[in-house]
Image (cartoon, rainbow, N blue to C red; front, side):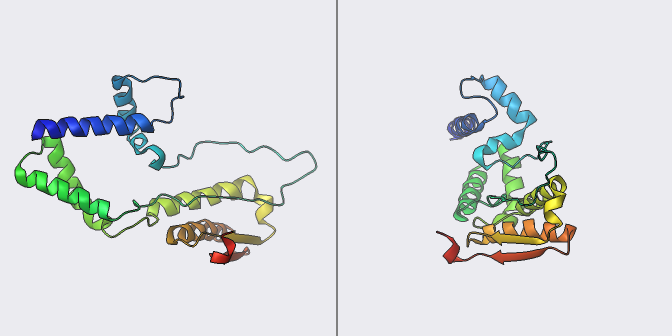
Length: 198
């Protein structure tokens, strides 16, 4: 029934978001009102460990006097991706559609239903694939790295390796494509082989 569903969804939202707020130290305590205020200002925090990487201003440490950087080793995870089980998109579609058919959606529930139904064709079938946002994240990382260490990228060689999953390979390619766009003279050696896994 509608009140039970509303209580369940509210409890689920509070539980998920309460666990996901990594901005506060573990010893801090948030009231429900503080939690709601944070989520109103920064809705992405509801994603917990799945929230988007935030590119904040940074400053690199200078090389010691008389030295310049000549080598960088970068280890990066894949960028933003779709959920790992495509069936979850179908599960939510079915849940929302059944609730609509039974007439138990609130006004906000109907808005969620309509928005999700519009987005569903874009989500359906994606299983852990890298999103456009994920590609953009790696391009931004490459831009920042080249800006911070221009002397390294004048030398001309990049050795790039990725895990064999599609999203990892596309992440690597996005990162390296941005490097090559900014310095077409770069030689880039790509690989995504099982032999590299150990």
